[in-house]
Image 1 (tube, rainbow, N blue to C red):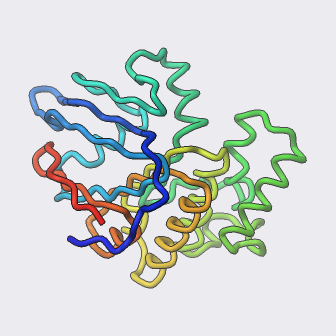
Image 2 (cartoon, rainbow, N blue to C red):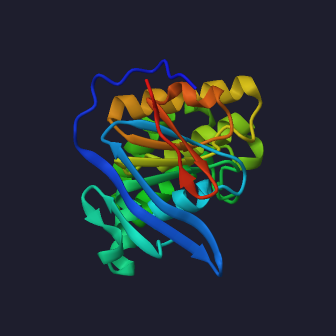
Length: 235
């Protein structure tokens, strides 16, 4: 797998550091001695067959799950040393997540879905409105802000989900098969959007995907097999 995307702008600072992480569910070893470093502004594709541990690693990176062994650092902070409340705060302000099936709230409009994290963060109404309108413009859905999820196409729903994920300006974006539920042309548009937004805001991206096409926006690819990471393929 050869990467065409170059990364001359990347700094030496790490947004994510994974050191010797292992994770079990019962007697099953899902992650085994996994180590990975993602630099600030770097986009890394994580590939591998179903059941290889990709989503488990992503959950550990996002603080949804905790490793049994090893350590994970987000912007230098060890997540296993944080209280549950502090970890939740770090996830909310620093890590954005995008999913294959969008996870939009069906009773809210596109505008309100994007606004939701800002409400939780207690942003003033005027500031929320400005931020959501800015994001709707960036994802080219200015005219669809009042539409509900069932009135949006799959591509539009994923654009709204991306805008929601970056609404609080996270430093890290975790994407789990974000194009897996879309047709190929729409998927290409979503990939272009992810690339442009992460580039513009120096957001680090970990992109879980089965598609080699999706890896084109990434600076390098790592492959997970049976809970272990294989050597990176760099640009």
